[in-house]
Image 1 (cartoon, rainbow, N blue to C red):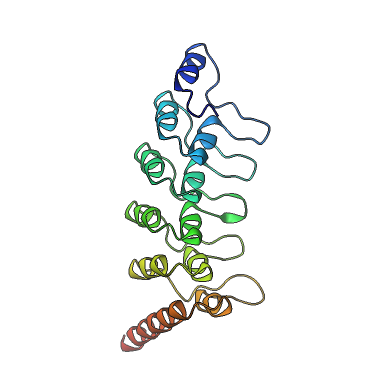
Image 2 (cartoon, rainbow, N blue to C red):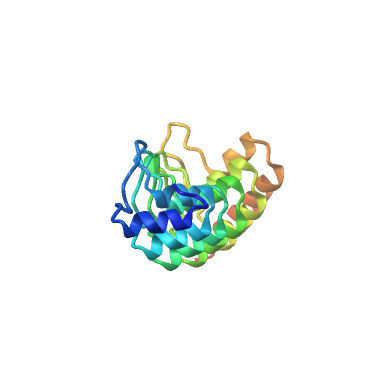
Length: 193
């Protein structure tokens, strides 16, 4: 990517360079600049027609990269221009899962506001709630539960992990209590039906 070199990038694009050319890792300039946090370069590349949802070798997209590194302005820009909010990287990691795992509340909130699949699962069955619970991101856990995340989802492993079990295993007592209370409320509501 040409971080900080907008004039050079503009020259190369006008000279006919392929804006979606991939490097040896399969990444495009847009993926690199999203991961580097260069808002102006991302804006330039989008304006010149860069493909928003191309994936590099690990299947990461510009949106997933921006979410992994907490670049809220870039996440907004990509979503405003139509990036696929539910694309998944290799093994099923999504933008919301990355934000949840790192405790990036503002990005998680934006993705939820824009309609991301809150209970999307990785190949192993993990959800954003599980990532946040395991990492100890109490504010993101609270947000996900308030927005309707299913706390009863289990992983597809032989251990059938849940967000609660992961919070217990990683010793996050406040999250454990929050999840217990949430699950009790859900179960009481189901019994009342």
